[in-house]
Length: 142
Image (tube, rainbow, N blue to C red):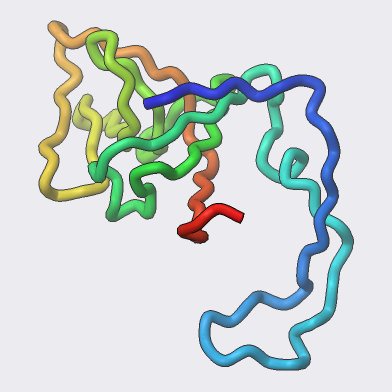
């Protein structure tokens, strides 16, 4: 997993946001209304000094919609709760998993991967809560 720091100060880049949700089927000509500009930094990053990006690697979180290469927005200032997707260091190795505080383990979002028990022998440090993921859909550059 690659960690990418958020640069401060965050530059503003307001982009237009459509007021109607975009249909995944046949588009409607009436759906071309534009709302106020939306700044993704303002929308995604609540605590700039405590936020970083991480690049997802592997397929252990597929059923939660996190794919290999996705960019994860991680906030270190948030307290991790049961069911949160977190970045955790397990015995010094970073991983992206679901926190199961009830049974003391980390869960994958893929049934092919077993839970990671957080027993007394396991060194576990939650590095942050994943608050969003960004997926690139365009295959070629340009």
